[in-house]
Structures are given as structure tokens and as C-alpha cells.
Length: 217
Image (cartoon, rainbow, N blue to C red; front, side, top):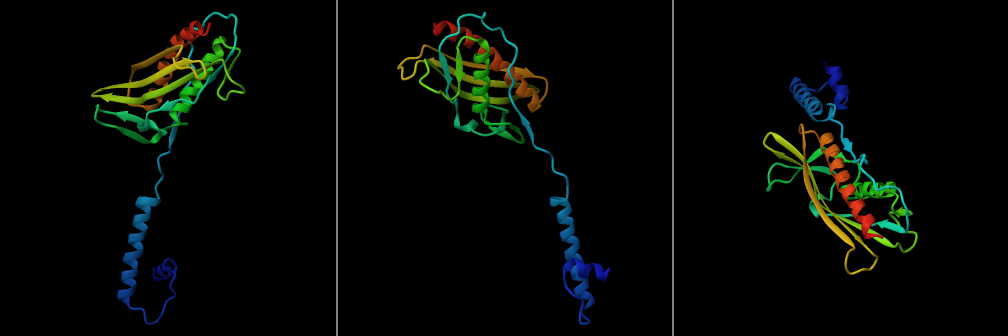
């Protein structure tokens, strides 16, 4: 036992070492090993990442695609400028998961998925996030909220999003609407929240694409 203690402590034995010194070292080393086991020796829970997906929605019938649309960088309320998935238990609470994160910033994900919907609709010849020239039209977006809501035994996913279609440098939009809906989820599970928010975004984009197609003619 003494030999093990000398090895762990990094000290060399001496004939002058007392039994009291050995006992003190034993307590110190055992305490250090206990702390290591409690705080540094266990297996940590893995971080989980979630993203949004393009859902199956009704698209306008194929027709004369024309012009270029730039999907500008979406903006988001400062409280949601984080990768952590936000959850709320009341109007006064604002919390977020430590280990359940969006794969990228929410405003970037929503803008990317919105661009994919519009590109698949075929109403424009080109849909760009970075315009190669001055586009005919721009789509702007602002996220007011993207979160899980826990109300007693019920859970919901909420996405509040404002979309604006305009000509570059125009004073007034061609079309604008704020969407704000909740969708129930079966349990407090971030994956289900991500799926529900994807479906809400798909629903919003179905209406938006029809309106954009009309406004851009």
C-alpha cells in the first residue's frame, strides 16, 4: 500500500516519514480519486442536434418561370439568437436546453428551407441566397419566436415568422404577412418539436408561394 501511495503522490520514500504523514497522504489521495470519479471520470450525456426539413406541400402548376429572386438573410429576435432550443413554461419563463441544439442558427435554417421551397415551386428562373447581380425581387424574413411551449401536461411547437416580398430599394412591399401558429406534440421531446416546426414552416410556405406567384406577375 505504501508503495502505491508513493507512486500516486510522486514523492520518494524517506526513512524519516512518519505513520501520521502516510495516513494524511492516504486521505488526500482517496479524496482526490473520489472527486475525479464524481466529476471527471463518468460518461457525459451526448449533445443532440436537430434541423428542419422540406415537407411535401401543394405547389403551383408548372408555368412560365421568370426573373430572379434573392432570399435575403433572415433576422431573428435577440432572445432567440442561439443554437439552443428554447422552451417556455409560461409567458414569463424563457429557458433553453443545454444538450439539445439546432444544427445551425435558427434564422439560417429557416431561410435555407424557405429558399428550397421557392426553388422547387418553379415560379422563378433562379432563387439565390447571394445574388450574382441585382435581382428583380427580394424575400425578407424575420423570426419573432421559434420555441417549445409547455403548458401543464400539453406541449406545443411555435413558429412566429414574418415574410416580406419586395423589389430592391422599394419603399413598400409587394406582399407581406406574419404567421404565428402552434402545433401540438405528443411529448416533451426536442425531435418532435423540430418536426412540428418543419410542418408549420411548410404550411406557411405553401400560402406564401401562392401569394408570391401572384404578386410577382
